[in-house]
Amino acid sequence: MSPQTRTLSRIVLLGLATSMLAACATAPASTDFTPPPRRPVDAKTQLEYGNPPPPPPARY
Image 1 (cartoon, rainbow, N blue to C red):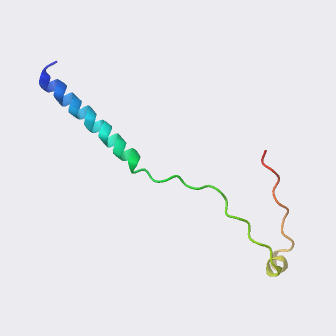
Image 2: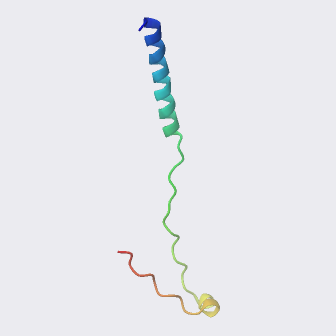
Image 3: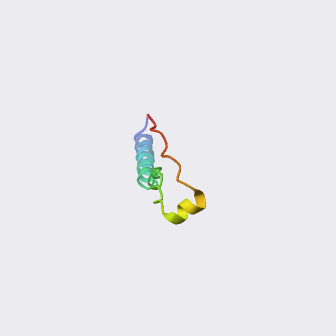
């Protein structure tokens, strides 16, 4: 392998590694999948929808 080919391959590999790092650094933040808090129960809500449903059972 000639010295020019070796130098060129190193430059290409460094450029590839740099572009991969740049892509990871600019990735969007992860989405928060926690549900919103339950609405407080008030008189109007009870009149419109009836009594609130019981809380959901435990997941585990």
